Amino acid sequence: MAKRDQSEPASLSEDSVAKRAETTEKYFRVKKSVARRAVSS
Image: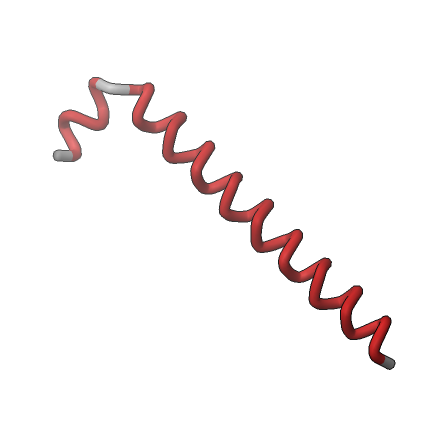
């Protein structure tokens, strides 16, 4: 499996894109929860 990944740089960039999307999603979720806390307090 590792050998195939090395010969396929596309899969590597796909992985980094997925990771970035995950980070962005987490960031927005935190932002939303912080905003909700500010409104409730």
